[in-house]
Length: 360
Ligand SMILES: Nc1ncnc2c1ncn2[C@@H]1O[C@H](COP(=O)(O)OP(=O)(O)OP(=O)(O)O)[C@@H](O)[C@H]1O
Ligand SMILES: Cc1ncc(C[n+]2csc(CCOP(=O)(O)O)c2C)c(N)n1
Ligand SMILES: [Mg+2]
Ligand SMILES: [Mg+2]
Ligand SMILES: [Mg+2]
Image (cartoon, rainbow, N blue to C red):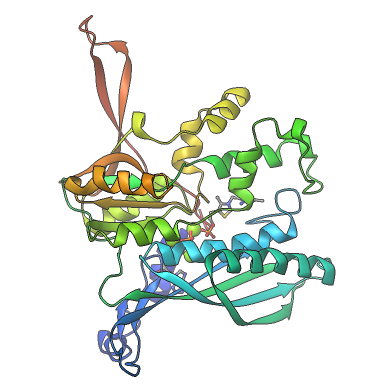
């Protein structure tokens, strides 16, 4: 059973709708984060809802000493959760941090992990308010719970994509996976997360940075959500293909992505070229990008993009939502000219929901 089937097997239909209603659950299991009603406070009852998310990092699964410094692990453990809150249109506020610590992670290393965690907390204005600590027989496990808020009724789920909508992403894709590839490659001998010299880095610094210090799109989500035209939102943890399928399934629509519109950064293209690999594989299936993938009303897409650019944030319009059975297609340009007409022929390829899956 794969990761997502397992979650369904453990949780589907286990609590009556009445229990969830009684506890004010607006969005439960199945999205990036849960949304629940806040108890009415003095004067502002019902104005906000809570957004709740937890994500875990396990040594050897999510990182090892070759791929991440201690501070990077702390940063990324919190950032992954901040990203899930952003993916609901929420603002992250409070964090609880659970660590299970093996002997090898002596106090100075753990202190450095917290340097990174607190740096991320400060960057996003999150207050670390508690946690839990245990020993661990072999690997370090860091699990972070983040509580955020969203204006009541304004959370953006994965389920609202409508035919005619434009598909967008809030940053480049595939860099993290390429960075991981480079970090795992022989150049580091798999020993230490050594700081990179300029010569070693040679164009890969941006890839390594994307892998070690992802920067979730909280501000972008706020700016976009305020327009009221975003119809679905998801963050890219398992890869564009997998996350696009989640929107397609939840919204019962087809997402058609244009290859020529996909944000392939120069450093990704250059590194892929050096390795003799296709950057599209990292872009579609790599994961850990922690940018937002969403859909919005087509009439507002160009204006939204200008507003984002003016605010210094990238936004790429990468495709459209179509009616039909849930699915994801990639529109590619045939390299041959269409019969000497000066036009290129287009072809559509179905994209499978392949991505990072813990039990696959
Ligand atoms: N063990 C579990 N028990 C109950 N609900 C779970 C469990 N694991 C995951 N979920 C829920 O299932 C849904 C999908 O979880 P998933 O972790 O895939 O989403 P995500 O956090 O957006 O992705 P990622 O973990 O890859 O960043 C979420 O609503 C999550 O809260
Ligand atoms: C050493 C090492 N090996 C492999 C990977 C790749 N990886 C691990 S988890 C994940 C998806 C997101 O995780 P989750 O779904 O748990 O949020 C990806 C792409 C890595 N980062 N480090
Ligand atoms: Mg998510
Ligand atoms: Mg998760
Ligand atoms: Mg995942």
